[in-house]
Amino acid sequence: MWDLLFQPSLLQRTLKLTILEEQGIDDMEGSVSVNLYPNPTSGLVVVSAEEIEQIDVFDNSGRLVITQQGSNQIDLTSQVAGTFVVRVSTKQGIAIRRVVKR
Image 1 (cartoon, rainbow, N blue to C red):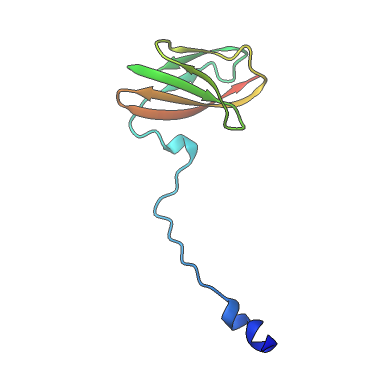
Image 2: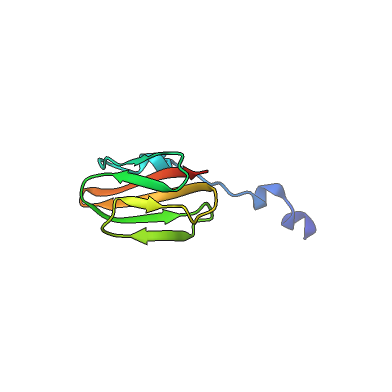
């Protein structure tokens, strides 16, 4: 009985994985044109895009630290130094960028 339970051929499973398309965080933008400057920054960041609806900023642990509407500037002055992910929602779509605060 023990031989049957521990035979490698009975315990093996086959997994077939097909990757259709690889995407990094900077490739998920589609046709939305967004620029952040200055980058790196010490505090204020200007978001250059047309018809901005909302800007969300996430820290490096994925926590939403800023969300705003009606402005094209992000104030990172009160945030600790590090890399932030900025999600810019426009009428044309969503763009995701990184910004570094020193």
